[in-house]
Length: 574
Ligand code: FES
Image 1 (tube, rainbow, N blue to C red):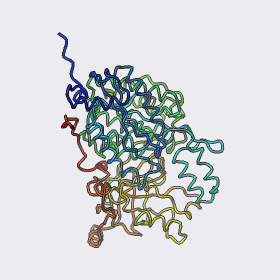
Image 2 (spheres, protein in one colour):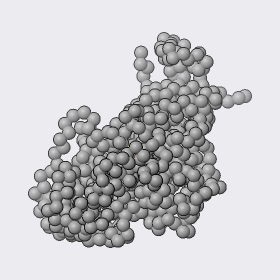
Image 3 (cartoon, rainbow, N blue to C red):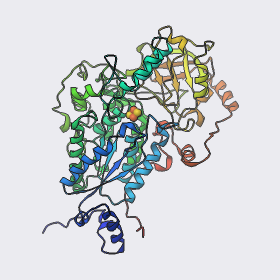
Image 4 (tube, protein in one colour):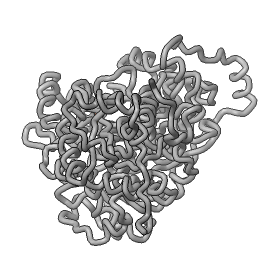
């Protein structure tokens, strides 16, 4: 006797022969939907972060149409729904403040609406972790599709990269090497097609994470947004999500600890963004999987950087795609990778990548002869960051990896802006720039201000890097010897709050050490005199955020959002 087919979740809305069923079906029918779509076939939600205020995701309505084709082909019923779209380039004070808000929007929409599986359309930096976090807390069959990077930027015959060249050109203007007119004229060539940042910044790192952790289809990370193959990938993902519903292949069946470990190793090999650290910790927290900063350091320590992409190298995501994309990198990582980790296409990560070709060894280097010896993320500890801080060795200057210098302290980002161009500022290239109160509670939202620009008087000497320390994040497109995510942050009473001008700070990346050369007695004295931090935030979501946000070493999630509640049957709405 054939096994009885399990009734799908959506039938709790659409399968009822009563007034509630009438209401759920009838109103949907005002969109021209015929009866047979409500017959018990998989209903697939397409969670869309389309927004004209989020240019990186502005082409997502078109991607959604291609996902729908695949869903219909496999006998599913697609329904697209919008969620909060974190715009990295437009949203103030920082889109990171709203990552958790977006994740709540996603979680409640998935749980409250009649869907059996969900496709997440992600692109601009925070949209990827926000949607993965929200979906993880629901645990339906889920596929993520990244929107793809922009084509290579062009300026005066050379390739320029999103963000990376913005910081570079800005420093050149301040050093008197570029006119402001030339700077402004680079704008249009910098962003010349749909898609997200084309460097290996946070968006590309997160698109790579989607692929390496197993939540996306092979080649998810690299296909440019303007390439037709981005749309056929969307089509195929639409087909696959329907099968996943039939297989009941939920997120928790795909994502195990080894998937997270693979994502950490791959982030090292691609010279990925430091932002991936907090996002991965937060996703793991939602899944109930134990991933810590120690895992980042342990797993990344041996991984060299294989990918010659900005900000660590010279190429861009378009070149990365033509070279073979992420599968070519994963194939190189054979000695490290957890080969049995499952992915959403039903195959393991290794099955997807083991025969991947490499078409350009100057873009994806071999493991035996890496692009840079140090990939990964270095996790530092010491009396300045008892719960850790991080640094990206592949984007740092080798001569500063072991450095001792005099602290020049900025009490806020406004203090930094007010004084950095002052010729009388007592600073030289051997100093250590320290920025306070820019962490999760302090900013609020842990803005990307940790890569403070250098003082013009230092830049004019031809110096392009100094050691910088803060509780902030930095853009994934940025570079430099920048210590980030110091925890606890200054606003939470971390030792960073106690640093004073003239203190000596020692950084030793190899020893994973960050030390403030001030005695315990003196620090205790300073702590007694510390006035504490009073957040100016008084109401709304930001107040809830400041009151409940976790520190960087815990992924900056809100304390009450950690974990998942699945999709239990909720009370009827009528
Ligand atoms: Fe959207 Fe960079 S601004 S990805």
